[in-house]
Length: 67
Image (tube, rainbow, N blue to C red; front, side, top):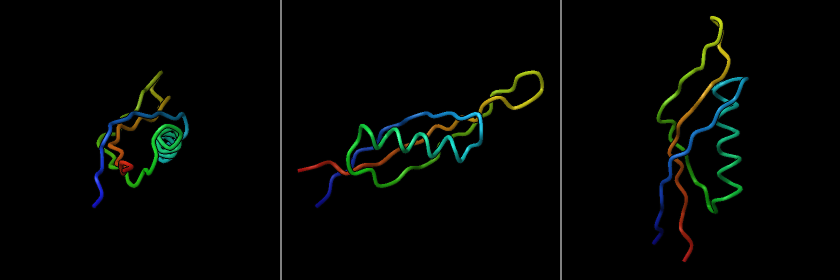
């Protein structure tokens, strides 16, 4: 039997939503063990002078707890 835990994280990138997701998952993997999935809960952009400055994602990351 496996037991999983879910934690919420936010990540940002000046490039794209995809890059923000990749950076968030990479950072989660530095701290959490057994990361298995992520659900993108929310996306938003920061706009400055009429242009997109930053892409932000908020996600729920699932990881399996060790015995």
